[in-house]
Length: 167
Image 1 (spheres, rainbow, N blue to C red):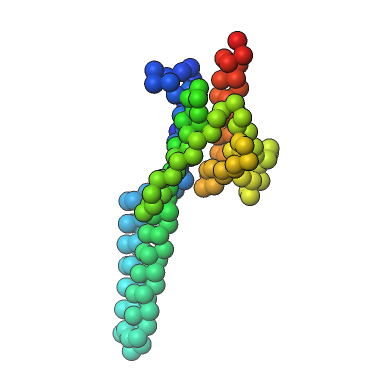
Image 2 (image 1 turned 120 degrees about the vertical axis):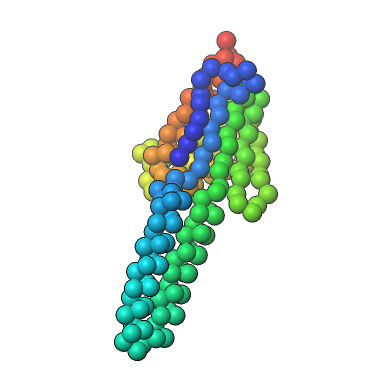
């Protein structure tokens, strides 16, 4: 998902601003409802096995619930990554924030910046920022159409900036 603007210059000098983050279709409430359903189903099945005398199966059913819970927690932690792009007249600043990691920052001079992605994008198409031999892939967690949308918006903002500099 992206949230961004590429309108006329903001008061603080930012010409383009976008925040990129992964889409998660299951809300927190949906997660707890799913876990409750899985837990209830495992309990009912486990009770049936227990009453039939196969009580060791109950532990494995509980382990399954814990593994599903753990997998979702890992997935939600990975979803806390985000990238912020800010274009000013002097630089494109890319900031990457990931859970448990120190934020990273890259800076590119807009005049030399090249934005590339396959059009139409494929599943494995990467959105690459290149300048002076440095390359940075951004938006890896976005869908191909979303990566293309970001690339087009950034190219438009860079073209407008280039037109302002050539007037």
